[in-house]
Length: 88
Figure (cartoon, rainbow, N blue to C red):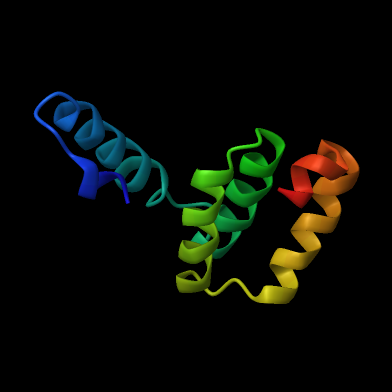
C-alpha cells in the first residue's frame, strides 16, 4: 500500500492522494462502492496499470465484488482495451 512507503519527500503527495481519492471520490453519493470498484478495475486494465490493479482487485472483494463479476470485467475489457491489457 502507498502509505507504507511514505518518506519525508513523498508524504504530502501521498496524503493528498488519499484525501482526494479515498476521501472525496470514493465517498460521493450516486454510485455504490461495489460499482466504483468495477469501474476502477476496468479503467486500470485499460491503462495497463498492473500494480494498481492488484491493489484494487483486493479492495474490490471488500466492496462485495464477486470473482464472477471480476471475470466479466476482464472479458469486457479484453474486447475494448485489447487482449494483452486484460491478460496482464
